[in-house]
Image (tube, helix red, strand yellow):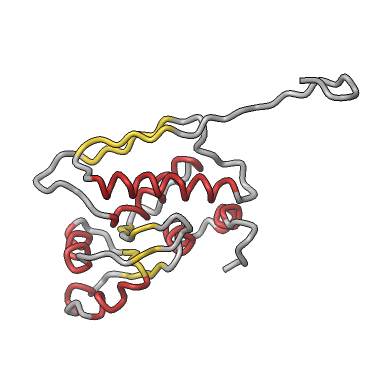
Length: 183
């Protein structure tokens, strides 16, 4: 295109990322994947960083196992993986998380907290992020299941990111949308 002053201007267009899901995902988990993608794209668009998932093809695969996976519990986990992909920054490796993610970044409660804590313990994980509204479920667990584990509670996706990328304050500051106050 040309402007009034006959100066050439160029426009760059980006293509939204393409999300493919395969494996043992039910319809609810597929929806959680789409919500995670939408929220992370929105988050990245409102930050001071130049991070983006646009023009990428992203494949989420849940391997076949004895139990098909269906439910919203992986929302925060998928979203965290997408932030890690966009930033090329690894997530803390001693971490398990669960929680449904809303389109506006709220972390919603999920079921099966006892089973998820047991699975994290068996996997040798010592830090677990749970939805803030699941505090009561954790309080009801026997102490022996909670021993030597550190729990963090998340009301928003930013709460999850502060645990997943703990210690990287500059990165976390860049990810804070301009409309939110600093934590």
